[in-house]
Amino acid sequence: MTKAVVICPGRGTYNKAELGYLGRHFPDAALLDQFDRRRAERGEETLRDLDGAERFSMARHTRGDNASGLIYAASLGDYLSIDRDRIEIVAVTGNSMGWYSALALAGALSPQDGFELVNTMGAFMQEAMIGGQLVYPVTGTDWVPDAARREEVLALVAEIDGRAGHVLGISIDLGGMLVLAGDKAGLAAFEAEAAPLEGRYPMRLANHAGFHSALQEPVAARGRAALASEMFGQPELPMIDGRGAIWWPGACDRAALHGYTLGHQVTETYDFARAIKVAAREFAPDLFIVPGPGTTLGGAVAQSLIAAGWRGMASKEDFKTRQEAEPLLVSMGMETQRGLATGR
Image (tube, rainbow, N blue to C red; front, side, top):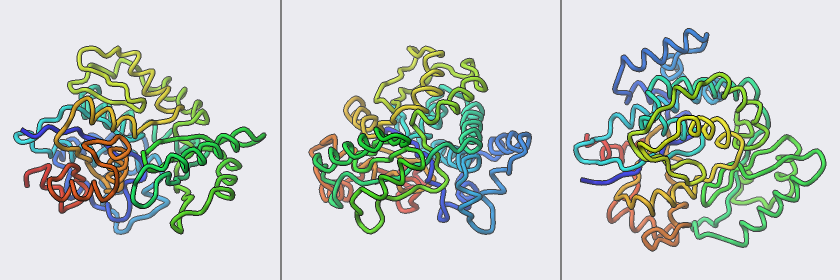
């Protein structure tokens, strides 16, 4: 039996190539009907209408109240499609919004309550739309950790954040990339002063608020008021959160899980690289499985494993050699890899 950790993707993963993903892959029509009835009750477009659109629209498909539901459903559907006769899932984690998906995959939330959490917080984020995000690499193209560059970037972020009328901080640590969150002035200052890299960085993320920063406290407070702790239960699988902390089955405090999910997880830095390091070292899986949609999280997983020195990997070439010899990472959004998880 192959042991696997499942890693749920976050915002920014449902794009043009993913249009129709639910129609192609979601395995439970009745469950999708339940999600769509809930969206219709809220006056929102159904996931089927969004996923089945004739063409992809950045303005329509990437806004928080639409993207969150699409991504959650795609991740859940892919998880339900994993061949459990061959693969034993030993833990789940996720990136950013992927934590909400991980809660449902692990059984701490029902699929319906997981959807309610995702859909509600996506709508609240979209309505408030406080701040923004950009991404900037702290390794070279070889994915070798560059401590000096990281320190330079962190110093610049701290200096800008200390200026009057500027807010800037680390939103997500992706291992080889840093996602920064800030207000208009903070983001603009970093874009003006950071060294341009690879012809595209610093890269502003469209339709993204300043997630995982103190800017989101009003959204977090609204979420805590709207979503009761009673919806949370004991997980069936260990869950690794955005601090690298493990929530164990049978040992979770419902109020603490609710408080973290709608508190720290919303307003503090999400350390995805640490979550992957903990997943690798504590559970020693044979395989890391990234459900869809999208394929972009695979690079962040690989970079985080390299940063952790997992199985002696120290560069992109090391990872590629290992991956080609015996796959360590499966991205279900890639048709060439999907069968490694589904057995079909």
